[in-house]
Image 1 (cartoon, rainbow, N blue to C red):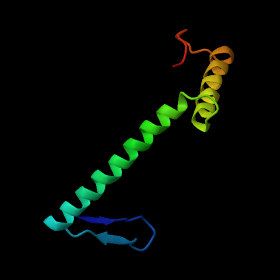
Image 2 (image 1 turned 30 degrees about the horizontal axis):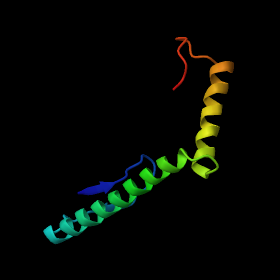
Image 3 (image 1 turned 60 degrees about the horizontal axis):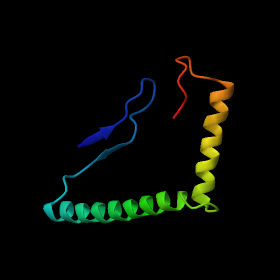
Length: 85
């Protein structure tokens, strides 16, 4: 794949040529991505559980978001009349 930039009035911009990955690189990248996704999924599940426990940082963030939504519903209601989620 080739990526480049051309702008009128400027000299040719930078460019980069990507070489196709080998099957070994593709397998390694797939494994890395799988592991990163697994770690992220664990972190999300942990954050969701902590958001239900009062006094935790995740719970405070959730309370702040809910308070902001309530404030916006009072001060700037949606034209449809429905409340924000």
